[in-house]
Image (tube, rainbow, N blue to C red; front, side, top):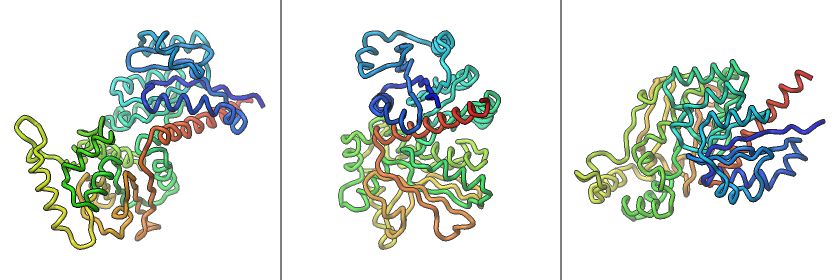
Length: 362
């Protein structure tokens, strides 16, 4: 059987994107032997420039990118792919770009499958969300995004399997933010002030790029919206009641954090809990009540959510068949290596579907 050549166009060569290239190059022989798949990166980009290499980038890709990358438009990428008759195309979105998701439909219409860590395409207004899926069906392309809610653990796949098997899902809840998991796991176990733990988290780099998104509750809300849409619900982001961790009462007039106000507020929340309870910041969809909420809750220390450690995230899925005991998916703190492996898992799934489609036509 001839090997399947997959052409990956990578958008974003930051921590995750660069790790993805290196992992695939290093494991190329393994993928050939185990999956009979040959991966190539003919185009890699950052937000402003792209490196075009017909034969695919190699170990020297970073040097070549610095020396040879040129300004680009998405149309240039499509034209290059057509000129070189690239088949089995996968656009990998390793960015958090609002602009790039606006090009998804154009990429699909021009032969690209999509794998994304970017969660924004799945939190668009529902009419645009549906339009994207109609285009995928029309052009017979795939769009996978398991890493948009977790490092690659099969949270979305589990939800889909339950939903399409006819299982009645009654509730989805969990701690979706690794940053806030770290903060509240420490705050529950230590006597340190809340603001000092926030500072430690930022110094560790945990909250460097998503600080405001996490504290506002928006990141948790987006992940919750993605989860609900996977089971056929047509909610908008505005349907989610978001209780931000940091409100106006915690800020100075100039927008700077008022540490005294923050520490006082969270200390009260901590000491007024029942015994053997801990604070957690969760997203929750109660299917039967049809309510979506992002909020601070007090959980028993014996519960799965209450036992979280470090920067772990957790997803609980309640169903009719498992009424009292939820399906629990828990993952360790995400790192660039784990997220990249999650992307590779989705890429391999797309490759397998391409292979199956080709087999039908033989």
